[in-house]
Image (tube, rainbow, N blue to C red; front, side, top):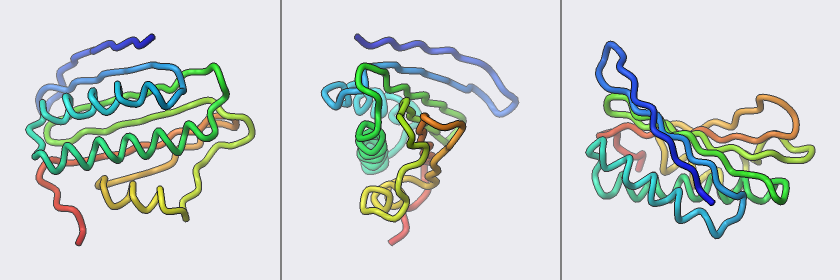
Amino acid sequence: MTEETETPAVDVTGIRDAVSVRLPAVSAYLSVLRTATAGLAARLDFTLDQIEDLRIAVDEACAMLLRHAVPGTDLRAEFELTGQEMTVRVEVDTVGVSSPKRDDFAWMVLTALADDVDAISDHPDHMAIMLRKRRGAARPA
């Protein structure tokens, strides 16, 4: 079961959109997030390459999180669109793990595909990854 809500708000720079998606922490549902990511990135007029980079980055971040997710819990994703930028935060409940490994191949993929990547450790037994992508920002060669 998926649930999607959209809460528009206005800030001084223009329209701000926030979308939250909550779905079972099972890899079979990641296609829902890939589709949501592509659709939201298209709203910001990202190029096709940027949309694909963001889709892959979100998929990779979720795969990292799902390895540690408590069975039967939810994967939560929050998308925020502001001006020319999309921020995506994905998170799961874990047992005894609060941060992904930053020295493995998956983390290197994330940092290559997104403009900014961070692991957020709000509290134990919870893992979150935040990605930020800006329209027009070039990937490092």
